[in-house]
Image 1 (cartoon, rainbow, N blue to C red):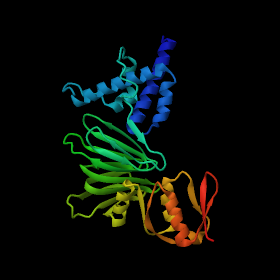
Image 2 (image 1 turned 135 degrees about the horizontal axis):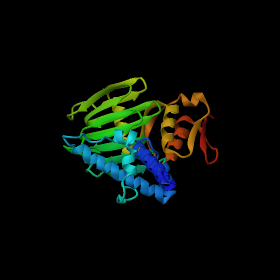
Image 3 (image 1 turned 90 degrees about the vertical axis):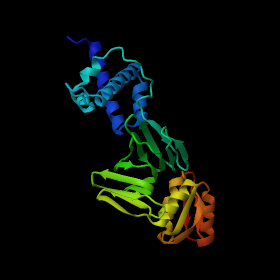
Image 4 (image 1 turned 180 degrees about the horizontal axis):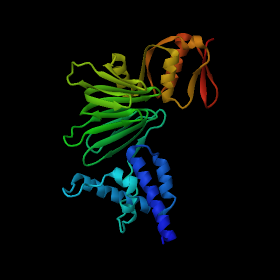
Length: 315
């Protein structure tokens, strides 16, 4: 007859296994995971034990026996939890070894990170990325926001970019990925990219300095590839300098774009004001220069409505 302690341990192993599967698939919130793990030392120990078993399965997968096929993670997670439950004496691997490295930027913040393989990632405002580099592949998850990627050459490990819209395989080169409410825009500045989603797949390449940059646009209806407009390329270069550039956009669209960098959002109350066209180059960290331009160019009234918003009105 199973003892109560054994039942509790089996339950912890099952919970830890579910967390590890969700983390590996990029479907778990790291803060929720940390809260679950840190609430009870037994949970941390169970997670370390499951992670050790997971690592052993990786080793079996990489060197399968001819007489007996290696057990897969899916088989283990689906019906082989007894393997993890029966392990004893597993070494504690460190509390974050099996959790993806994670970096975020706040609203209005930018950050550049060097990755373990010599690649780099620049995070624009309000962005979250996670990454994990293993023996056979390099993986980076874009949860929200916008990033510029410079990918180093690695003959043995492909580079995979995961987003809520699909998976992109990226060759060495330079790329810009931005998540929008409608999907993903992936600009190929140099190199090759192939993207696969539930709605379709396509690829693009920029292999010489004379090749036009390419944009892969992913929406709910499909994937499209086209030459990237020059203003899109300029905008990518601009945000990396802390700038924002407008070239005849409607003021409503310009304000929506600028609000990405502002904690205190701007609001247009008059539709006629929103229809005005705007051009210019502004610093994302200096909204006052933008507001001064609106006063001077269009004669707008700027009304401070407390800590939450700034109203733009016609006089």
